[in-house]
Image 1: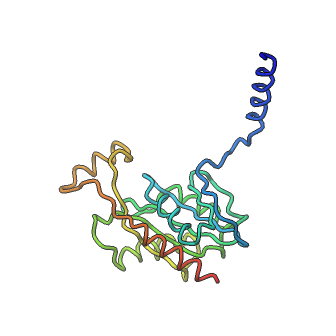
Image 2: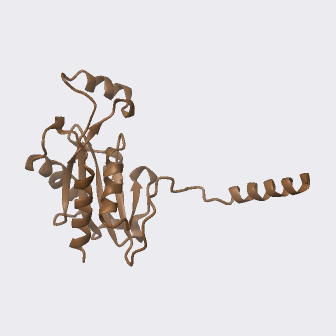
Image 3: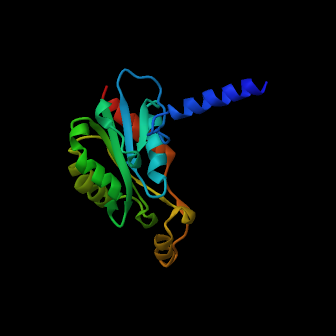
Length: 197
């Protein structure tokens, strides 16, 4: 009996060694589609991750969803949606760097853009849309005439870096909040999908 257990453990150990070095731990597995879709996001505290997954759901869950920290290879995708979180009026720095370095892999394939910001809990206006989509994401991606939306975000103290949390908590009347709306993300996903058919 011990011999059998030893052999099982050995086979399992060898199998573990054969796993790829870079596993896609954050990848969202889509439903089958005749086109390959991806949603790429950059986020500090997870709000843009949720927006990206919900956008994919709005597209009938046909898109892989990637965190920019995975440094995904988007060259194999036909259609790409790109978005990220905003802090101090700037998109997530790692997303900006990725877009600058990898533009040739997604240029001409971007079908939608999104941004997520707290906006001091105020409604999103044309000013925010222009600042985050028109002046940042569109120039970085080369995508100007695609469905795009800026969503209100959320604050969760426990997910923030300690120094940022301390600064934010010094703002009068600043509290934890969640203004990201799933139905708005689903609607953008549906709009993006419909714009390509």
